[in-house]
Length: 356
Image (cartoon, rainbow, N blue to C red):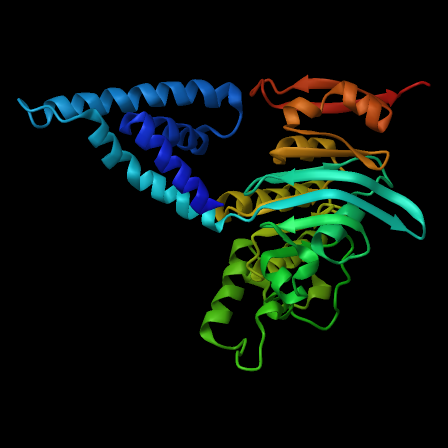
């Protein structure tokens, strides 16, 4: 698909002219600078496009005066490296899609007609009332539960056609309430993340493997207690260790099932900030089941709301997490409060149950 996209882009430029290249490059560059919120993306793209064209035209007229270079040539010189960068980046992106998913457990229908396109390199939060199938959906996506109808596609390939090892190289999951082994050190547990890469001819004791394990511990800030037994860790330290183990798999997609459960407020924020860092720094797609609506609003780029076995709504937090949807989905009346220091940062506060 990437090759087809490159061919179509080249065809469009050949018809519209080299100056049309700015229309391909500028919006993507603006998105990297200001994010995907169209309130900022559209004006930023316009201003950046004006600046690029003005600079290119000025340079083309002045640099080789009295000769004037066609502005399109300079635009091609300026834009080609960016285009190659975006092309290379698209090769490394992993796309995940759920299509017409239906899951029954003991003849009880849990999910039906689920269709979700997860945004690559973004953080998606799955929310909904208890028993709506959030964890069930995550287990199906991860391949832990393969008893379903429909398709789960990763880069267009059905996950049921992938071996568990190959799937684990693309995707890692931290399930809710993971059992903690009592006799393993932190580093030993993190090293289990390298299981998909084990073979008869490959030792986990070589320098490259150890470097990957050390890097995973460093990114989750657990290096200082890597030799402690996992059983001696606090809840927050233990959760970071599990995330490090998942990170050692070097996945493109990280699945988290209520990662802040049983943690106090400080450790909840600590875990969510680490997840946010991994997404931004590693360009890792994160899909997480969250119980806390405000965590979903603060840390997610996209929200999927489940209710009555179906996707109730999907979209950006500012769009779908409002008091009306909270009343419909959770049956609670809520108020929205603005942060005085940052008016765009809002906090949802449930105040009462909806009366039938």
